[in-house]
Image 1 (cartoon, helix red, strand yellow):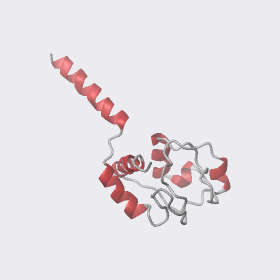
Image 2 (cartoon, one colour):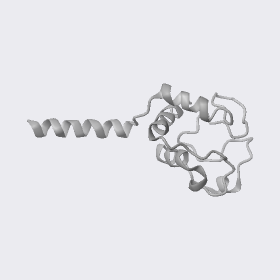
Image 3 (tube, helix red, strand yellow):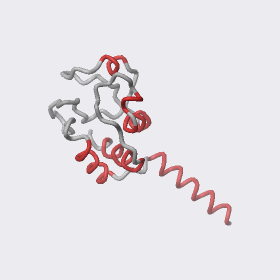
Length: 123
């Protein structure tokens, strides 16, 4: 019985990790404090210093019309998946050398997961 409980706990933990462990409300706070200055997050919103981020999840990077992307971003093969965004949010300039994004990155893994959860709501 003990093994069954451990196995079930493992399955539940793996399921939670696969679905993402981020908190949407906490992610919105991270977005508002760290991203909103440079990026709009509402459908039809304007590009700012950085491009509009509404609806980017699952899309290829540098495809939003009306924004002038850096050459490295245009030439990248990035598709904004959870894993790609996770890597980007940790170290954008190391992920894509030559990007114009001046953001140094987030060092807190929980903030990253929360922000990814919030980004999924922007659709």
